[in-house]
Length: 134
Image (cartoon, rainbow, N blue to C red; front, top):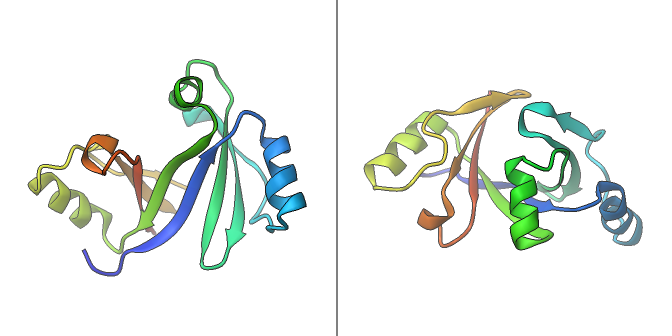
């Protein structure tokens, strides 16, 4: 799969404002827009500029969400790595053909991009998100 680049690294946090205090305040990273509430995934997210990529801070907003379960089980820290691909459907097809376990068999769409997750069991223990800008 050529032309793959790092889109963002995602960090799950217990308190988004506290995390922003460190990443923006102490470390000096700039915000890339306002905090977004993603009701379908029960999270609030904030993106921070990080050179040619970004850092995504994720706070669960419901105790029964997937991110909340992740946070309860593993604690705050790295949640996923997101790679940008030029053709998500083609990438998913190639991964399926290689026997890779996908969380999303079909791409989802939000905010001008399509995305799908690859199961950590197939990605060296890392939750992997693939993006395609549309």
